[in-house]
Image (cartoon, rainbow, N blue to C red; front, side, top):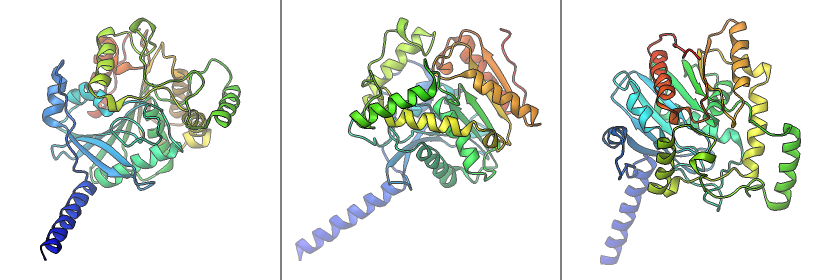
Length: 349
């Protein structure tokens, strides 16, 4: 009888644990080492949650700062990023009028990995990123009166694809920083694709691209992401504080999917599906994505009678929210202007 009661109790506890996990109740992720005020803000205000992806039941982690506002912001990070790198941005957004949600994509950040190689930047199908974003919005954000997407780099491509795929009028405006609408490549794209396909057939599609490796940051002088040495070192230190968010170079499959999706979402018929106001923040010295492609699309949208505004930041590199103070502060100020329905004030280059 005692064994029966004990077994029943165990099953009940397991059931409660499973139910709690399904609700996204996981331990809060907070900074243990405090270097900036925005880290204290994150620790005090930001909650950690998760959901099971409807695609394959993978655990997807997201973060939220909720004050029962009627408007929401959804931050969509780039490749290899965790939402925790946006702690400064979160502290500067108008959280008195907007709730904020940040998504850690599948295979990176604090979300579940997809392949055995922990640091491998992998996705089976780029639309899986998009469908996870859709699930987050439908389950957690759809009741807000106004939703703004902020997409950086790969997150920009995900955001654009989301708007094209799900024409549900959920999102009212889109802010993009160096969106991945075309990769910056040293040789023609069709050559890259052929070389990568051959590499994948020989080494496996979950293997790193040629010369790719696990997370191993270059020196500041060799980096192509930012001109701000302090914030570059902070980004490296974050991966030491949270080693589980490390992501190295792209895998073959990720690159093939990135080439496919950037080709698809920039087709004329797909661009015509973008019907909401768009704001672009573009770095002049970006060597990761082609900023001119985004600017050209912005011009096309304006010629179609739609609303697209763009600012170009002279000398800035890809990670604009880790850039020098003048660039970073201008972008955050202009994001706040967009969220207040005011026009952007671009720097005088």
